[in-house]
Image 1 (tube, rainbow, N blue to C red):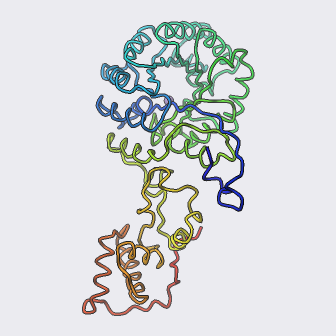
Image 2: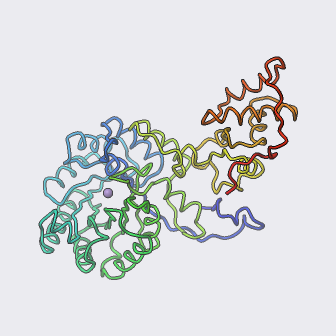
Image 3: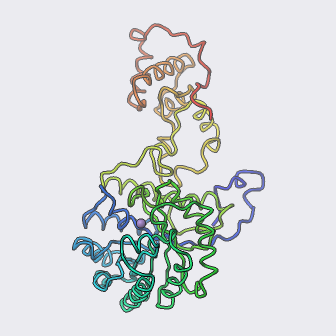
Length: 427
Ligand code: MN
């Protein structure tokens, strides 16, 4: 895939610059499981099905559809998604208990391709404080669960919960044993979002080199965002040898959430010069998928959210607007249309706006203004912006009409003290 974002693309000779073929990273989407279990994000069965279809269209490789033992509705959602969505692998979560795995296996029966995802904590803290289990009991339970899961499907993922805080010798023993028992994916979650990027890269490098049968499984990262590092840690994990990343739309999930799918995908696309990896995601569907999730859960997306926030490609500051109008690359590292965002909302008119943007928006609305009219409209926009968060097209139309009606035009305001492009914030 050609990298349209690397800045060499824009420079002399950049078009033909050879880039290494990116290695494929599997996107395991957990919007409907880890995301859905977060407070305020629960979805009913039809909503989950609608979201699963959108995730299918988006191009995720695996949809974790739910945790069937958790509730009859969870099991029903997994069943309906398995029956209706056929391209991606449909995964269901299960603890290592027999009933959990049987329930997951049954819910997945209609799936064309199914995965059972079973998990057990391996850290001393979780084993002693939560599970009251010994190392030996933990190891045996993990192996038994993987074997049982394999009797339902040949695609089995084992997760060592709290892996990044686990004793590394013990963790390596568990991983080797579950791979021997038939686990095809080994997920090592940073369950509490405690790891740092350099640490997690070293963690995966060391584990993959220490576990003798590591080459028989795909290693996976599942990073939480408690320190805002989930995406950075997921990228570092790939550099440490991981080939599956667990993530969610809008980064929803337990507490501060999971690695955000849209950020992770676009970081790889935009910086393929530094990270030669890619996913099968159709990035032009990121914004609409994000909006669908916000609508279904009635939880709005943070305005300044990377990639999918309404401000991710919006410019109000005059200096920025002037730059973007002359060449968008001055303040944009990717194109809004590439992630499905509209280009029409790019320039926001408000108190920090510049004359160039005001004029450009007026032209887009069909008004050809004289220099003096632009001047008056610009001042009216700035003045209205003192009282409003943003100036909509309707406001701008009314301002232009008023400026063009001499009797209602306010007394002329001197513009000599105003910089031609407006100020805003330069940096
Ligand atoms: Mn999680």
